[in-house]
Length: 148
Image (cartoon, rainbow, N blue to C red):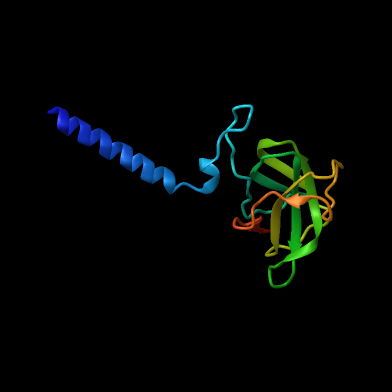
């Protein structure tokens, strides 16, 4: 293989890597925090489920700052209601297999909404007037799932 061919292959590979990097979401191009930890977008994953007792299982949640996982019920059209029916304080980071206690259990076929909030006011329970959603406006701030 000639030097020109090797140089062309390296240049093409670097070009593809640069194009691929430009296509990544905006948070992926952000520098690491001061402590060297890369920024991860907030996320929550909840599956349709049968409720055991008064607990809902959230498969996964990531919050970039101390905050809350908040569950809401839904109206007859499946839209989120205003009052939380469950919440769990979370430290910043990755969480798996979270059990959230409900104040009321919706009937089978009902939708539930899971959302993440940053703890702005420092209190142990969410205050919707103070604590804010951790997602930017361009990203969904909630995850809907159903009671079986």
